[in-house]
Length: 422
Image (cartoon, rainbow, N blue to C red; front, side, top):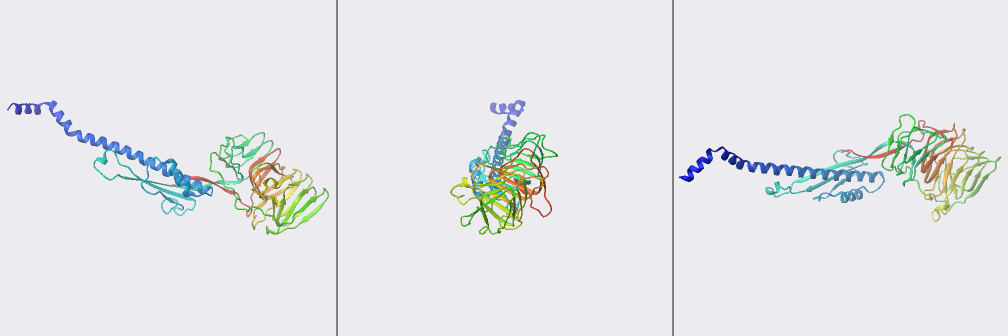
C-alpha cells in the first residue's frame, strides 16, 4: 500500500510529469541529433565529391586544349585531389554522351561515386548510402587573336615601347607566366582586344578604347604546330647576292621537295620572287635599307641542312627598316597563309627583325616559334590581316602597324579557355 501511495503521489506531482515527459521524448531528441549529424556528414561528402569531379573535368578539358591525353589527366587529378574513397570506376567521357556538352568533342564529362556509412543511420541500415557527383568542362572560345607569343617561362612575352603604334584589329595573347606578361612603356599606343596571358596583364593608359584584359588564362596552342619540319638535305642551295643597283628575279615551286634553296642571302637591290617556297640554308637573310623585295603567293622558310644535328645553324632574318617589302602568302598548299617560317628546331639565341618602309605591304603570317620576332616598321605600312607568332614579339621605336582584314583574307586565330559547363 505504501508503494502504491508513493507512486500516486509521484504521478500527481508536476515534477514527476516533467521527468516522465523528458524520458518519453529522449529517443526523439537523440534521433533528431543523429539525423542532423548524418545530414551534415552527407552534405560535406557530397560537396567534397563534387569538387573532385569539377577539378577532374577541368583537368581533362585543359588536356584537350593542349593536345594531351584527357583520360590520363583526369585520372591523375582524381588521384591528387582524392578526399573520399571511390566505390566505382570513374566515368570519363569525351565527347559526353549525356547532359551538358553532349556530342561536344571539346568537352570532358566526369562522373564519380562513393559509398559512406553515416554515423547514426548505420545503426539501423546495414548498406552504406551511395553518393554521386558529375561535372562537365569544355574548351571554349576566348577571343580572336592576330598575335600570339609562345614564351612558356616568366620572361615577358610581348613588349611595346618607344613610339610604337600598334592597331592589331583583334587580340594579342602570350603564354608567358610573368607578373607583367605584356610590357608597355614610353609613348606607345596600342589598340587591340582582348589582351590575354597565362601570367598577369597589367592595365596601362597606353591602351586605347575598351580593351579587355584577361590574366591567368590557359596557354594558347601553337596555331601552326602542324607544319612539317623543313628537310632540304637533297636540295642544291645557291648563294644569293643582289647589289644596290642590281635586279634579280627568282622562281620556285609550291612543292617542298623541289622548291628553291638559297644561302648566303644578302639583298641590297631589287628582288622579285615568283609564287612558291624559298628555303634559306643557314646564316642570315639580310635585307638592306634600299632593298626592294616583292612576291605574291610566297613562303620564305629559314632553316639549314644541319638543322637536326646543329639547331644553332638555322637561318635568321635581318631586315632593315628602310627596305620596301611587298609580300603575300600562298592561299593553298602546305604553307597556306604563311609568309615567313623559321624552323621550330631553332635555339632561343637570336632575334629576328622584320621591318619595312611606308610603302611596304604584308599579307599572311610571320611564324618564329622558337625565337624572338622584333617588328620596327614605319608609319604608313599596309598590312592585310597580318598574323604574328613568335616565342616573344617586340615592337620598338617608331614602328607602326594598322591591321586590316579584308573579306576573304587570312583570319585571326581563335583563342581558347576552359570552363565548367555542367
